[in-house]
Image 1 (cartoon, rainbow over the protein chains, first blue to last red):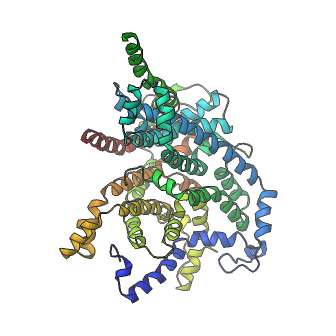
Image 2 (tube, each protein chain N blue to C red; image 1 turned 60 degrees about the vertical axis):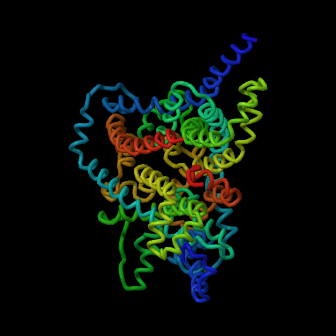
Length: 282
Length: 297
């Protein structure tokens, strides 16, 4: 079919393509569709082993309210918000500044600093685990959302600096030169000229960092424990342990946990994809 | 006049320092120093609480004789190799979706869906999918009077089962990279190719793929790193089992340093150092390529 536009093909091929499309999509999303269906099943269906058939009754309201009233899922969700939002803000603030500095100024070691951020961002988490956990303990912020957010801010700054720096480099330099000739101070150039131009990059990274942090599981298990500080990923896993037979509830919980990043993705798709492709594939 | 020029010069040389300081300090504190601390800790015997005992390279020597380490290493290699399937699979779906029929935007978004949700959810979903008594896989196998199979309980299949789950979101990621890349493909070159009678494979190989090189490069980078970072799925789906057969280095490290099996921080750190060195190969390749691109500008 590629790269010939389908309109140029025969009517039969077009019809085939249009039938194959929804079919392929259902197949691709089958695991999720199954979970969505399971999340509205009754407990009776689960005990009877009706996991994949059509639900005998639709308990949407009951299952979804159950997970909020009978499990600490609500507080896990709230913890995720408390970790994710400050991380997004902190990361963007730090990386806007560092990206600006690396893109605009020529100084010794510029490339070295830049590569440090890039390399650090690819490092396996495990080599940071023991020291970071220890640090967090010593600072007295182990098992707090603050401790988790601070680490995330630092780590995500690596990736975001890479992106911001490349983005600013693609902006017209004449703007900055002209402002300098006028005698505009450096921080005012950053604040009034560059920052407004960075809006697309900021949007892209905000969406991306939100998703990464919301979905983080490793650091959530290493730096927190218990419902008072654990985010929803780790919470869901412990719920799964306690509710082994209650697939309908765990499914409902999974759907709820997945909703914020999914919603953000659908709302801000363009930015999300711009961030993911790192500006490398234009 | 000269005073103001001097102050402006000072300002300009001071500015990068001020703009960079917060990010560098944060990054040094939480990312760069811990790398070296881990290297140091790997030379000690330490339970994370009491005193550290210097043991030199003993942890590494022990690692050389640790069967579980080799199992993890072997599984990491399997991950690396099979994870690469996400790249052609992503390309295939991208080509399939590279049309402009009604509702295409929605289709593309829905295909990308698996990447947006947490690996914890993906892990749980696939654990149910593989469930030996009620799992959808066995229901389907049952239609063909096959099975039942216990994917996650079988030493030979477990790693492949987990990788398959991981390929789902990873393929979605590669797909979106290629869809974006395909948007930028030059239609004139396609027409020119068509005049030269390029079709199907030839068209793909000689005209489309060369133009998708940047997308392929990023896809390889993120896939390799994703494969070496694999932790979430192993932890959620099997916790390394059965009998440690689905461990990967990232998970084995965690298990040694931080689980009910003990708090051997030094030994865990040694495993992490090995994983880091493997990853360093890829990071270096990436940096060298970046450096060349920068020079080319």
